[in-house]
Length: 258
Image 1: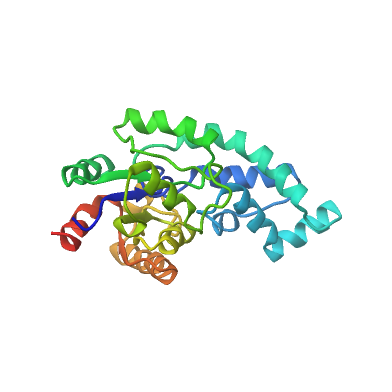
Image 2: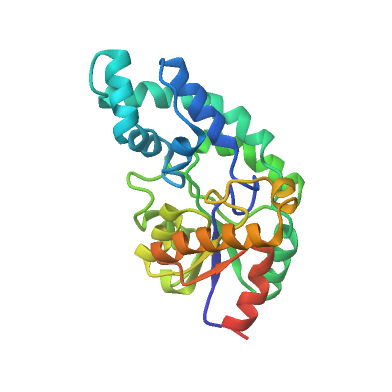
């Protein structure tokens, strides 16, 4: 068999259709410091480790200017640390509330295991946040063979560290025997940088940012437009293939490795 394991992202890929859990928390955390940010601004760096996500938001010109106007100084690393310290405990509770599995996740995992594939995972969430998410996902039938969190490594996404840790955890010979499935640019880059096959997830992820119900209510032409937009972002990042949701992965694997 060409591949030995599939490595999944969490929010927007296996849980939290539309990737909603962190959004309100970023907005609320910045508001606690007197800075208004939009959901779109909060979504822009999605997929990065959460401290790096906050740092990227602060580096955005509009937010940096608002910070200087409101706080009287340019944002510093100490400001990043202060925001992060407030964000993490807020997100621990919220992430669990949004940890419903993306439809098709349980069936996809069964199909992968039937092929003899191991199932790994990486995430931009911290270990403390995932401590709240893991039991909720497990109760619904999803328990991967490993988990690499953003604070497990000194250097995370978009670098290859998480994927290399997956190789070690899962006993996989090489990252080239891995498939990375993710809905974000940093997550795709994580797979690309390791030399893994990468599969982007378009409709359930951050680039579309809609709930399953909201997406289902749209006309087919609008869904097609959203699919094309999200797919182009993921392909530009280096995704080898793009699917709508995790439910489509078994068919792709049947084509890739019959």
